[in-house]
Image 1 (tube, protein in one colour):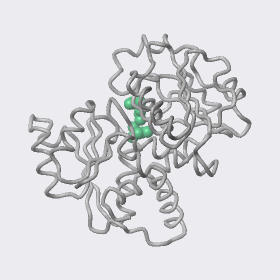
Image 2 (cartoon, protein in one colour):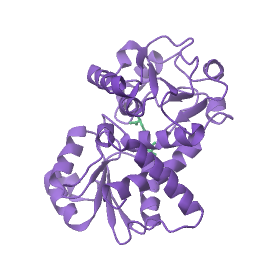
Image 3 (cartoon, helix red, strand yellow):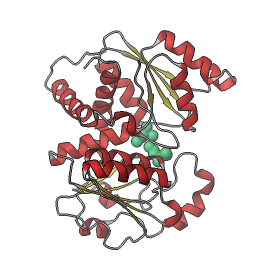
Amino acid sequence: MKRDLISMLDVADDLEEIIDLGIKIKKDSKDGRNVEYLKGRSLAMIFEKSSTRTRASFEVGMTKLGGHALFLSPNDIQMGRGETIEDTGLVLGRYVDLIMYRAFKNENVLELARASRVPLINGLDNEEHPCQIITDLMTIKENFGKLAGLDFVYFGDAANNMANSYLLGMALVGMNVKLVAPKQYWPKQHYVDKAREIGKKTGAKVEITDVVEGAAKGADVVCTDTWVSMGDETQKEKRLKEFVGYTVNGKRMAEANKKAIFMHCLPAYYGYEVSKEVAHGPQSVIFDEAENRMWAQMAIMVRLCGVL
Ligand code: CP
Ligand code: NVA
């Protein structure tokens, strides 16, 4: 049976093992040890939306693993002219060992996964961004040496892909997760319920609030994401008004623990969800986070191929 990564729930049983593997591959590679675990294998990457980090990190990561990555834009492949997702999956599965898909609709990711006989990795859709959350957990573990028991607070759009995956991912590793957002941007209830159910086993507490003042008190990790995700552009003006007051700035960071780190998956829009001072300040780990996309995804690909 092949294994896909579409939701954080797909790594419920070995999330910390994957994180530790990412940390190991990073160290081994930097120390000059051989990490060519996927020699001769290929990854197809389909992007329906823009990307800097996901594209570069998957492509270079696959090269470091001894494999090869193909960038497939829907504008260039027949899917853009109406070939079905099913046929695309059936065909690509005959050439490559892994498929990464960044899509507008989660149902399309599920359909491609069903059709292809090789593992499918969700490179971001409207529901989740699991590669980013595995990366963020790896970055948090590098900084604190542990995950369980830490306090994570996220300001901004709590109804987007990042927030959904944070809820599930943080609950799985036993981190307390607080989402701070205007009520109309709270996550769908089933994500909250699932995170709370997981938290009963792992000890993670889950809180959703619209109260900004004091919300970062005691936080180890302060985090945000864009207020206007890809696909939300038509609501831009409305959103920029509704999120006023939810910016992560010096005041929010001053409420958090002294050793707190600031995280953002990027791209960032300075002056909106975060101030440039915080994002480029001493507590920020955003560029380590961007780098870790590559190491974490190398671990994910090795794992899904069943090599380690
Ligand atoms: N964080 C992230 O997924 O970035 P890209 O959109 O540049 O891939
Ligand atoms: N929530 C953002 C994440 C970008 C990496 C989006 O979907 O556009």
